[in-house]
Image (cartoon, rainbow, N blue to C red; front, side):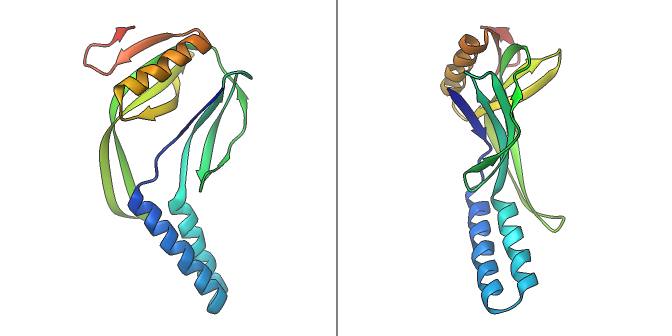
Length: 159
């Protein structure tokens, strides 16, 4: 089984990416090669996101970059994970262009971090629903033989 976590691209960011890509193709076809390539590159940048993928059967993982559903990353052996933390936090997504911030959007999310070598961790999953987070954490617990730390409240507790 493979578990894939890819950060969500905001709807407005997707719209902007499509507009830039379409404009880039039109400019490339009818006007300037350089300007068309710049618009296409900006569109791809707005559509790109990052995440992680873990392949439980092969005991490998990779940090990925994803553009329009295509994923890139180098597979590495899974380190000896100590525990999975279910952690409630706020995710802030900034929309930037040429160094200027166009807008910042925040929402509550629950992340699953797999910890190893003390305080090193990799975020392997993110959701907005607590039940979904604990379902996936339980899957990690069984597949990787790790404990679950519930850090969704002020007082963390082992499950």
